[in-house]
Structures are given as C-alpha cells and as structure tokens.
Length: 397
Ligand code: DNO
Image (tube, rainbow, N blue to C red; front, top):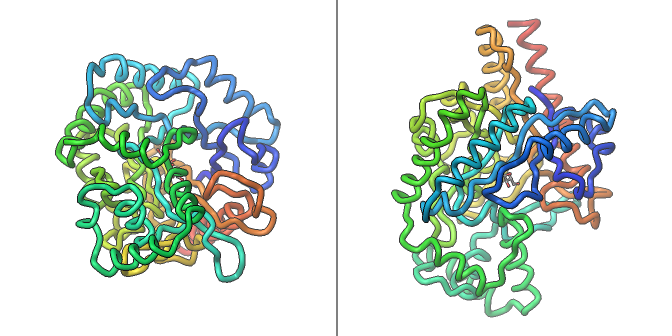
C-alpha cells in the first residue's frame, strides 16, 4: 500500500515540506489551473512533477486526481470529437511522464456535497456533515426546485420547514456556501440563481441518458488508455444518490459492476472511496472491494457515521460504520495476488481521505476536508492497520 497524500499544488496552504513529515511519499494532485477539456501539456506535467520530486523530500507524483471530464461529455452535448481527443492526449502525455494512475468522476455538475463544513466533534475539532433536513431546506425553500419534495420523507420535510422559518440570512448563506464548496471546478461558485440555471442544462437527462453518455466516454477513452498502460479509476458519487434532481450512476455495487462491464479492460478501473460508497446503508464496502478487487487502482480511506434519515457525518478513520480493518485486509490480499502474478505495478496507492480539523488545523483555512493534522491522524491509524495486517500475513499465514 503506497501511502499518498492529496496536494492541491503550489497554492495549497499545506506545503510539500509538511506533507513529507506525515510519512506519505506519493503525491496525489492535478493541474488544477488548466481549464476542463484542454490538453495537459507534457512540459506542464513535467514541471509539476519536478517541483514535487526536486523538493528533496522523497516525494513523487503518484496519482492524478482528477483529470476532469468536461460537462459537455456528461451531457452528451454537441460535437465531442475534440474533447475526447484532448482527453486521450492528456493520458498519453501523462504516460510519457510515467504517471499511470488517473482518477476522475462522472458526477453531473456537482462533485461532493455537504451541508456543514465545520460540524463540531464531541472531543473537539470539526468534521464535514450532510444534514438531510438542511439539504431539503435548501432545495425546497431556497432553490425552490420543482419536485424536490418527492425526494424526502415527510419528517425531513417538516424539519426543513422549521429550519427555514427559524434561520436568518447568515445561516442560509452559510448553507449555500457549504453546498457550493463541493463544486468540482473548485473555483466556480454559484448563487441560487446561477445554480438554477446550471441545473437547467441537465433537464431531460435521466439515468439512462447519463449512462449512455458515460458508456460513450468509456468506449472513446478506455482502449487508448489500455494501450498506454494507464489505469483509469472512477470515483464513486458523493453522496451515493441522486442529488438536486441530478441523476447519479456510480453509487452502488451494481453501478460499479455496470461501469466495469462497459469496457472489460484493466484500464477501466475503480477508485475505492470508502467514505463515498459507505454513505449508502445498502453498500457493504469491504464486500464491494472484494468483488471488484482486481480493478481497484486507488483507494480513498475514510469513514462515515450514518443516521436513519439519510444524514451522515465524516467519522474518524477507524470509528464510523465501515470496518476499516476488513477493508484494508481486502486491499492487502489483492496486492499479494498481483505480486504472485508477477505484476510490477502491484502496489495500490491509498490516501487518508479527508480528516477532522484538529488542533492547529483550526482557522488555517485549508480545503474543506483536507486539513494537515486531521489527515495525518488518519494516515497514522491506517498505517498501523497496514503494518499489523502485513506482519500477520508474513509471519502467521
Ligand atoms: C473530495 C474528493 C473528490 C474527488 C473527485 C474525483 O474530497 O474525494 O473531489 O477528488 O470526485 O474526481
């Protein structure tokens, strides 16, 4: 298991010198400055790669997260020839630089969604939280999305109404900002009106249409990726359900099976994100990992604690509903299998996905979910699991 760490690039408040002290050696990053749909040039990739390697801290660029899929591809809109060609070219350029693991997602419009970015944790510190009635209040009362009521049970709608009636303008703006923080562009933000318009672009696109557009993307990209020896790995939907009336198609075990069946090639793989998948009570994350182990190219390890109304919060890495030890055991078993097959690329990179804001994280203003101390705590705990399980395999198998 390669210990890796997400770094947002030169503008990340967390510096490479700090990351090195966490013990991670793989860097997970992207050329965030390049607009979606454009080619990532070799020189720019190499420059970022050198910046990481030449820090002299023993770090290297291990995984791309993400090589974004343009919204037009997701919507299947217009002539997509150039977008597909550009995506293949970016993959070829990354391959030329020796970077072969590429994470992406196929979520329409939004990336991850939470309603609170600083929910208090009982022992101190904060976490990201998704509160069902706040999401409902946003959709029904602020955005006034047609049909939104149908997506929530009556008790959640009732709580949403009370929330809306008793909230002041600041609280509502904080909710909007929390929800908007998960937009993929990382830099685009909408107000309520802007979001309404953006959602209109998805009118008429349901699950079947989105699946058809995704199948087309995979057909266009995977054969080239396979030839280049690239490992694409789709990130599941976060949270794993339809949201704001947008269809989501990478949310369940069956969805993952569908994706992987579209192109039966190693290059068509999965980012096993335990926190995203784990937010749906129907998903047994270790079982999903076991079923699709040979296509897992990257792992995001984090935990969630779920409530019965669809709310959830990000728990400490070993404390939520997912059996993290069982999950890591599956990944280590898969590495052993690849090794036995003689594959040189048997290592699965993982990163401590998200973390609580703890101690000196508080007030530092890092990306939501990506503080230094909280993630370092998660990494240290996960490292302990990896060591213990590896030791057990080696000495007691
Ligand atoms: C959130 C992340 C996602 C992820 C993308 C991958 O913290 O897990 O933003 O990077 O969905 O494409």
